[in-house]
Length: 231
Image 1 (cartoon, rainbow, N blue to C red):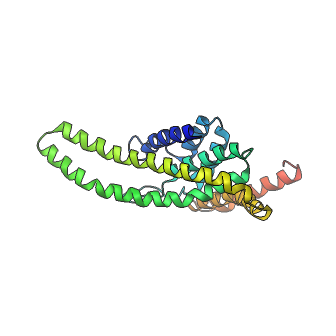
Image 2 (cartoon, one colour):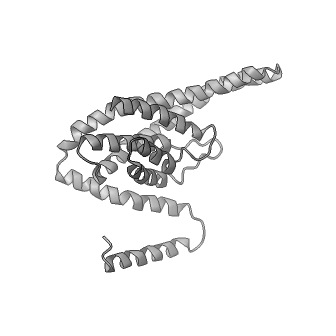
Image 3 (cartoon, rainbow, N blue to C red):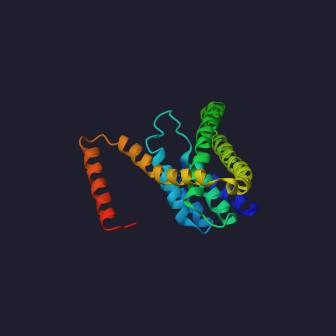
């Protein structure tokens, strides 16, 4: 397990850099979580977690100076916890997936606050880069850019490593102590999270009449599935 934690910390930190560097949408939860799942030979669990986390914060867009919660780190951590702890507990269940997402959502908000501090600390690098530009020191500008990236990358790797190292063994020990009511609650949360995510996604739609149409389609599909006993 320790080897997987180190590998996921490095790969997750590298993929999360897409948030500020390449910005090719690789860091989106719906993409990064299946990649993490693929590394752990379980892309399906990663896809489920990635979709839930993606919809949960889909209305938080990094526009201007606004820094959204770090949903990329949440997706990596939740996928890692669900798969690695699930293997130790005899299988990956909806309850473990729901618990993993709930556990790490607050750490996405904490990561946002740390990222704000890192950005503020980069102000001095920006000022130094301006001085290098005045002196036509291209190498100096490159070093400032790489240093800023290295600071963020180091934060991602350490953050992922420490949280995985703490919570994966802790969940393996604590989860078997959950009684039937707690497991039932987690099962309900597992099915509630997509509904919450859809509600958040609908809140971003500004077209008149879109929500009633969506609700009508959802109702028709639900009736159809119930009539033909899809589940």
